[in-house]
Image 1 (tube, helix red, strand yellow):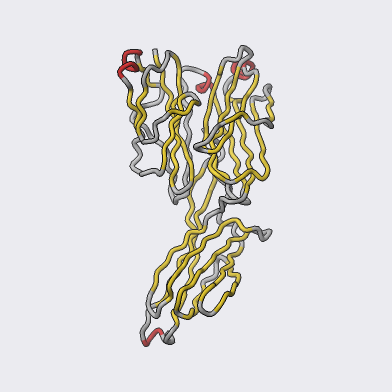
Image 2 (spheres, rainbow, N blue to C red; image 1 turned 180 degrees about the horizontal axis):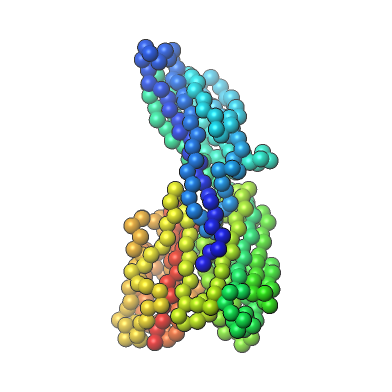
Length: 330
């Protein structure tokens, strides 16, 4: 379970070009531009840290028939003004308290002597780098499990690419926790895996998580494990938000800890994502190994006896999130 839920906002700029008419007193060859600023929030898990208080000012650059100009507007300020008719490029830059750009957007619009409604979404960039601080805590898993953990491996990789072991994990086995920090890590969507081993090299617990890093922002989170994650009756709940005004949690047509027989596996067991949303891409991992299915359905066959975890990774609007289903073959 993710212990640290982020309050991440989507920043909308609503632009209204006012209609013509005698009462509007809009000169010929101009349109009236009215800008209102609003914020829409949602709950997040391991996503970049961003809240409505982080954006301290908004810069707007106008590039059009009358040339290029730029001004700074407070986020709570509403402004109405005229722009000459013609093609314009409006660029928006949201800055934090240190003047660092953390969100931006660009829109092209043809200004005419009529009414125009336009909504602009300001989003973090993906061409630079951000900061990652990711932790794992199994201190609530019981002293027996804490003592059994001999070492922890951290694997990390781009979604759709290779996931490889990464050095730099700081581990306190006696306290039951570990963390890793990455400065200036390239922005993008990643998969993070923690694997806990005993002294014989056996896997005691495994968890996989979607991680999103964005330009000039910090991505922080802690994954908590308990006794259920070290036993055959446990489940790992992963809730990942995406960059829309609501949180979306992966759901499956099967329940966690369902038991399948060898005969059922030989015939094939169908696992399907039952969310009503349509996603841009799919990827399935069985016990950390990528499988070939790229749709919302995965058919399992000939899975060996034991406890297994099937993780679905899904992308929507350039943000990655995931869900894990645990099952038993006996």
